[in-house]
Image (cartoon, rainbow, N blue to C red):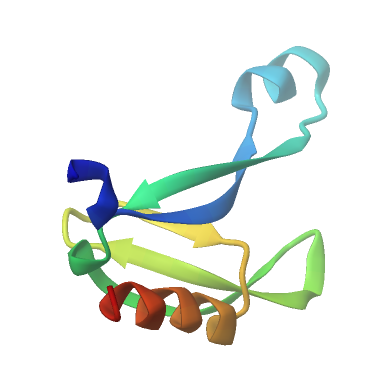
Length: 85
């Protein structure tokens, strides 16, 4: 199946419109699906709101980047499990 080539990754979505209207913005949990063969690079990063929690900054070959709310080891586990399919 076409969708089998994608992995699901947890992300946070920032509401720019909410910030413009109220001056405050909240992040909401979401996800994105990525073709792991399109990942150009990844590195550890941190969320400004939770500086003690390690997350992963992922960049795709098309230049798009996102913060994935997993530890590096958790992210690598998902990638390695995908390769076993």
